[in-house]
Amino acid sequence: MAKQELKKEIWVPWMNRVLHLASLAEGQTSPNPLVGAVILDSRQNLVGEGFHFAAGDHHAEIEALSQAGKAAKGGTLLVNLEPCCHHGKTPPCTDAILESGLSRVVVAVKDPDPRVSGKGISCLERSGVEVVTGVLEKEAAFLNRAFFYRIRTGRPWGILKWAMSFDGRIALPNGSSKWISSPKSRKQVHALRAKCDAVIVGGQTVRTDNPLLTSRGLSKIEPLRVVLSSSLDLPEDARLWDIKEADTAICFGPESSKKLLEKLPKGPEKILLEESSPKRLLETLAEKGCNKVLWECGSSLATSAIKQNCVQEIFVYLSPKLLGGFNAMTPLADLGFTSMDQVLTFNDVSLFKVEKDLVLNVLVTRDV
Ligand SMILES: NC(=O)c1ccc[n+]([C@@H]2O[C@H](COP(=O)([O-])OP(=O)(O)OC[C@H]3O[C@@H](n4cnc5c(N)ncnc54)[C@H](OP(=O)(O)O)[C@@H]3O)[C@@H](O)[C@H]2O)c1
Ligand SMILES: [Zn+2]
Image 1: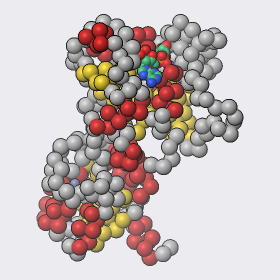
Image 2: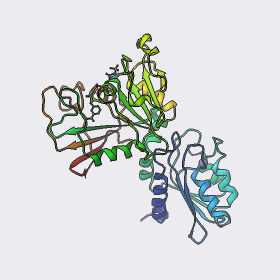
Image 3: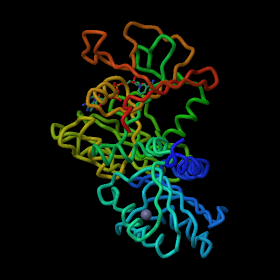
Image 4: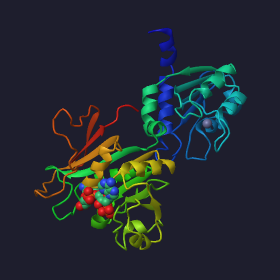
């Protein structure tokens, strides 16, 4: 193994710990990334660790430094993302690192945020701190794929989820779909919501299912519940209009009826989009600080979202039930393909079982 590679290899076990710490706050830190940190003293003993809990709270490096105190001097900081060097809601971490007397910083991946992007690393190096980069780089980029994707594209990472019978239906011919998947699978979906910043449905799902769309308390900050509707023909009463448990936003385009706009329920926020489209909706949600959203809609909105490149990952809950019906809804409408060479094909596929359901997870976007 080349000397440089060996130098990185020795930090892998600790960096795994850092990634684990960072992941503990999944769904809570947006618009910020997930960051964990570990501090080893000059004899390589663990003297401090921490993670970034939520936007506005201490950065992970500061948590770990406050635990380590004087023991940080001459020691090593391991962190999954390049330390910040700018004044945000909190002062730059590079200042605190230099004050602590740490002699080495091991970073998994550079921060793509243009305010940092290499500047944190060069600031440390200029001040005489040894910086090792690229330790578990791919894993670290994957953990923060949603943050990276938003910084790169201006849109949050989109996860599309649907529950489907063995014969490929997501609802009965009369629209009823409660419940296709098992109770345990539905609990898992609550956990998935807890990791997202917003959950999106269309007007028809509100009219047919009257969903609640919360994490059932699994998340300290419930995801924003978003209804995209162009008709604004929404029910007077719906569970989503009660914003005691979680916030709701009703989003619509300029073509929506002004009359129906006046009739919308008081609680939810109303957001006028440039047009009623998945792309515009996601740009707006990114501006509101969302890194990751969950599409829990039916087939027409899911199809628009895929066509507009608003889906980067898919979860399919496949349940051992037969619903039947030529007119029963399938997960997607026409994607416009006319040859098998054009169809969407995935390489990154995982399969697991929850009770009797099979769960498929595919990555649509590999470039994270
Ligand atoms: N099994 C499952 O996983 C699952 C999940 C969700 C839903 N469902 C079922 O799916 C059915 C509803 O399906 P749906 O396809 O009508 O879903 P939807 O989630 O209601 O999405 C379609 C609605 O989105 C709104 N919309 C606004 N802009 C849009 C755009 N650019 N493209 C597409 N839609 C846009 C429209 O609302 P307006 O009509 O208000 O303008 C449209 O009717 C229900 O029977 C429900 O039970 C099943
Ligand atoms: Zn920082």
